[in-house]
Image (cartoon, rainbow, N blue to C red; front, side):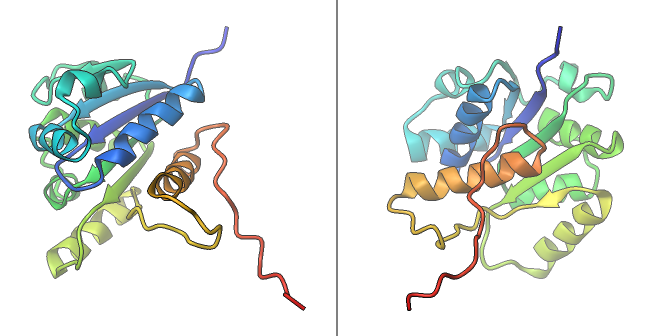
Length: 193
């Protein structure tokens, strides 16, 4: 009997709530067991951008946890999670991860990924970056995390915001090692002559 891969998904207060919802939806479609933890600011932003409350967001995942539930299974390295994505990732959460604060379940789960040498992907959302942001991104990269600002690709000529988001989500899932993710590759320029 095969065990489903497990993906921890963190949601913070940065703009880009649609990335979290699409990531959860696509992971479910690929047979991945999802474990969600959303910060209070993340839930506020999900409500503002998508009109969803905490319960509606949590319904998108297989399992969900309160942000202060430091005793949850995802707070331990003995919990066999394949990877974690923080989508979107605020600069506050980036700083907590970069400095090992583990002051919430979300930042503790990210710390677990780093200490266990598992994949951690941070969809950082801010622009422009200041020096503290850049130094924190460098720090988490040196620790093994993947800094993945959700920047859209236009070479496949997307015709909607959903197409842009879906392409980014597929790229993120592929980086997280999720089998079945299908990011659209760049196939080179074709001559029009």
